[in-house]
Image (cartoon, rainbow, N blue to C red; front, side):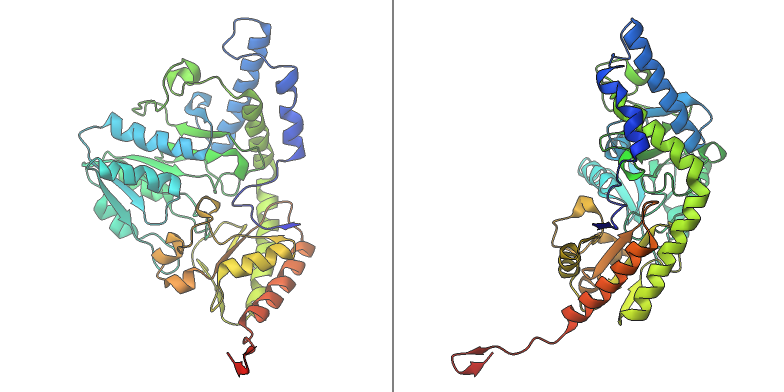
Length: 389
């Protein structure tokens, strides 16, 4: 299989697997237990917290809370902000947020909150002027993703956080796609909360983290235990936490070289497809983009048909967010960028990783070109009952 769906999930790095394995059967203690086995587990959790702290560029290890996933981290951040500021009944987000943010805001809307959805332009860039106009003392939190999961467009979150803080508004960013792909360095920004997910950076599914700036007003989402300093109840998933720490350390160490290599591969695939496949274009081509992401629209082709043919050819790609897979409607992201529903349904996302090779992409380009030609070929008339139909 040629795997080009790394924005959906990544293969767990073998080094990460080796790091986590002892915590299933050897150092399996509960970190809250007052004995040697518990102490060993607690020390492993603390070491992983430090590794994540370094990846995020946080000032203190205590600013890292472990969660079950990025979705939980997003929900915790937004709901904590609105509960900590009950008189503020507005929330600001972008029109292209992940469903993990959109769904929470839809529920808040039903409770009477006003949700400001800031538009993007045809290149997927946020309308910063509209964002600035929406920020006011009535807003409990602004939540804008660091990088879009479908197009790879990167937003100016440091600037957005600064605008929010100038009005006394908390700022959260969903950095699930950005972690390990861009330099975060949150301590040099006004970002109050930030979400990441392990399975996007070669750790297993079922583990994430929330950065919570020291001193930020906070109301826990999960209660019932003292874990994470009372900010997230539930026995710690030690093997997965260790895995996230190991993945964070690997990502930090190899960030610059891998980003350059992956960007060159992505650009080569983009150039090849633009040259060989008529009537296709790149989404967010004029915006800052994640090095690994290539979202393209193939005019006149249904993305689902393209993906089915690619799958039969042993190539894994996607039509957008895996969390929206199975929905027949076009993704909200290309629609927000001004595409028609028909155009949006022709979107294919290729997302690379450090494991992607030039050979993989050459084979993928051959397959895409051949499939596009086949899907656009006129259908020959069929004879039925002596007549052509």
